[in-house]
Image 1 (cartoon, rainbow, N blue to C red):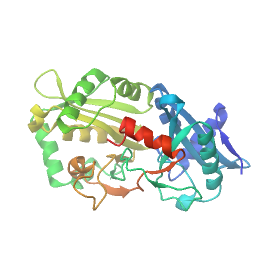
Image 2: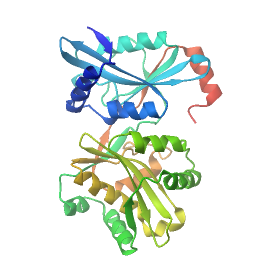
Image 3: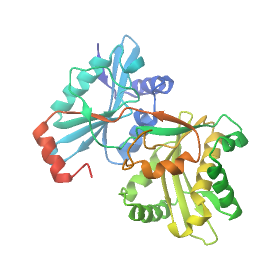
Image 4: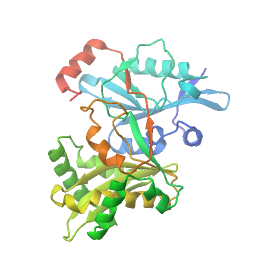
Amino acid sequence: MPVRILTAQEDLRKYDRWLKSHPQGSLWQSLEWEKFQEHAGRETRVYIAEEGNAILAGALVLIDRTALNWCVWEMRRGPILGVGGGGSGSADLMNAIINDARKNNCLALLLSPSEFLRPTPYTLRPSRRHLMPEATRIIDLTKSDDAILAQMKPKGRYNIGVAEKNRVVIQRSTDIDALYTLLKETGGRDGFGILPKSHYEAFLKHLEGSFLFLAYGANPNPISGLLGVIWNGTGIYYYGASNYAHRALMAPYALQWAAMRHCKAQGATKYDLLGIAPPGSPAGHPWTGISSFKEKFGGDVVTYPPEQMTVLRPWAWRALQIKRKIWR
């Protein structure tokens, strides 16, 4: 079955229509995400397997270059295949991608599909990364505001009320410097790394549907921030940060409520809180800390397979792991 890399605008528009009508279609396989990643400095490729005029399978591949012209290929929430993780075109698509990856000095291919893949002739094993969450909470925005609040945990509703009583003000903004200051503080406090400021700038400037909200208390400096995006009818909470000194004001709860209402006003029917620890996870899971916060907003828990990988150059991959400590 023919597999192609898309470059012509007509073909890319066709892929866009196909993806947005596919039940597994997601932001991370979209042309909007491709544009953002290119502005953030990454190489991209869009593959499709087709029969006649019909797309049967597809994938947006991100390529990270390393030393000595080695690279790592990645498919977030991809590949997009047939029902049940297989179907026509899936084997041809994956074979073409892996063959191209080998020719491109690829050390490993990492993929985090929405559904479990059928058995393949190449070896897949867990990557041990948690870049894409294995579970999330999705809130139904088709309900009334009162109904959305009612399905939250009592503590979630209460904390939104606390923020309102404390006169926390939410404003839409383009001030990435303010968000980055909050991110640095939050990352230092909670012990997680943050990306360069240019990444968040590219997200807000070049990712269609993105938005930034900042929360203010009594002083002129923001005390919390939320960076999100709306894609194909789904609002997605992506990055959040807050000033610990003002934690009693409950600004992050007011931000989430404002983001939900914004997404709903823009026609979104769902709000994805983007990442919790999967049900039954051990206490040390990387997403455990944020899970309690997100649980207070209710929603339905949706799970995904853990990220898988196939190592194409084992010795070089092992050397890269040791050098860069990429799992830390």
